[in-house]
Image 1: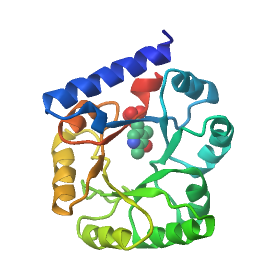
Image 2: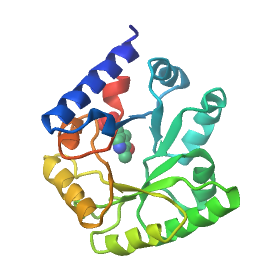
Image 3: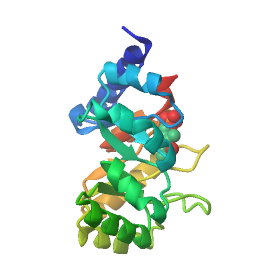
Length: 217
Ligand SMILES: *Cc1c(COP(=O)(O)O)cnc(C)c1O
């Protein structure tokens, strides 16, 4: 087995273990390989090992790397996981299947306009600033209900809620908070969990985990 295949096996086994511990079906958890700053060769090794969902955090970098990788592989799915500027909405709609970082009404409007032009509407997660951190992306808890309502009234399918908990503290309570917000608003999907904390995220209901270093290093 390649190193990439070994790492992928390990992460998948962890997801299965965490899901079973919480009496969840592991098939309900989508593993997204976060390939930001990774080369085409590193990405190809994971594709060969069976990885199909990939996440990037910058439109410019993704637009350089991915068209060539996607050309011969229409079954891959690309996820935008980083902060998105409205003036990149056109490029984002063309490239990504799912956007995890919708955090404001003006960005939703830009994505809708771009989607209508392209005839293609990516699904979106509403990102929540669960730690109420000044510098972090994500809608505030106060703005969340209106933003969820606006997505539901738009042509973009609502995939769920996404969060990046504050660094350096235990993530579990923030995952639980995101799950509670999703329940309150009748939202199904939960994009949460990275290399350092995805087993906890899966136990607390994650339906998509975004993993970089554990798959690539
Ligand atoms: C980089 C990144 C990840 C993955 O981080 P790792 O610690 O490498 O697993 C997940 N989510 C977002 C939004 C990221 O930017």
